Image (cartoon, rainbow, N blue to C red; front, side):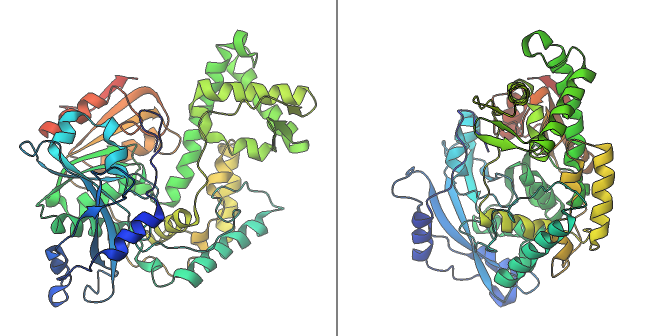
Length: 493
């Protein structure tokens, strides 16, 4: 998550939080007579999260059932943090937050997200962060994956497909061999249930919520499971709950094609500056010539050697037209110079390298939330070939085989069908490579009581969390007054 001042959400030092959690006394009344309700009676002990960090950030541990079907059985701890409301006289309640993922830790969110929230919002809410089950300091899951196994996207080719199948199988087998006790219980539905235990343990009748990316799906699932306990929910850069999760992966390539087409038109209109082609068709043809050239002889730019597939793997960057264009120019210059160039010219937006915990937790959720993943590798082969034909930039990358094809245990519960009247505010950039505008519209259809603010021309993954934007006003108004816009809105970035 990128904040308004350019900082990224960081994690608390593992040693500091681990020491805190080790020092906390397990909560007492966690399972009265084997009921889930008993967990809400915990007496929480708050302590400073990190002696070297922000003194306002307090941490505690909330015990929850590992298996909600057996609340009297094994428990796990959920690491929870807070920054108290700025004005106790104006305090309304708590604002839980999730940064996305799945697999994203959230303990530092109360301090990291403050710059993007208005003073009026900070006065009214205790800001609550938490590491979801399986993540960070909340019974973290691990698989012992190699760097190659932690890479989600792999280009399809007939020559490498068996290797792709073996890699996907290896990830699934490693995860189950190391974390078989946790994996069946690391689902969005259970994390939503954990949120409700946190609500009760905090002594709150209802919760408000700010979720980004995957956090929008988590928030929507909470509204479905606990509609009467959902107060003011802001969903930033939303997923379509009907697509979870195979459809989400394949939806990325649909958005990539739209963004790529937009970029070709943008670059053509600025041919005098960049020299990539006077028409969108010329820009497109020139790009694919570069890809073909790099597949024959990789192109080196700024010390990074790229094949054609490696160039396509940057598909998300095409939503940022001004940032990606110099990079394509550098590729063209390098190709003309015989395959190398000194200037990096790299896109300004690059993905962070995932940790094993983040990737392991993500696969647990992706594979454990739904029973819709195909089990036959040949289905993935057919999908990759078909999607590459219709969405050449990234179709095969999103459709190729994944570990869920070999997940040892099918989801214990079906995927949550989100279909309710709970109030919520969805905010969405028009050009988002991860949660596309089409996906956000799917969330809007599922939440009948919601309103949606679309940032026309907005680029990138995140609105509130990246700010400032024209959506800030509606978000702050909703969180402070509870009043949604009268209708869906489109505003300029």
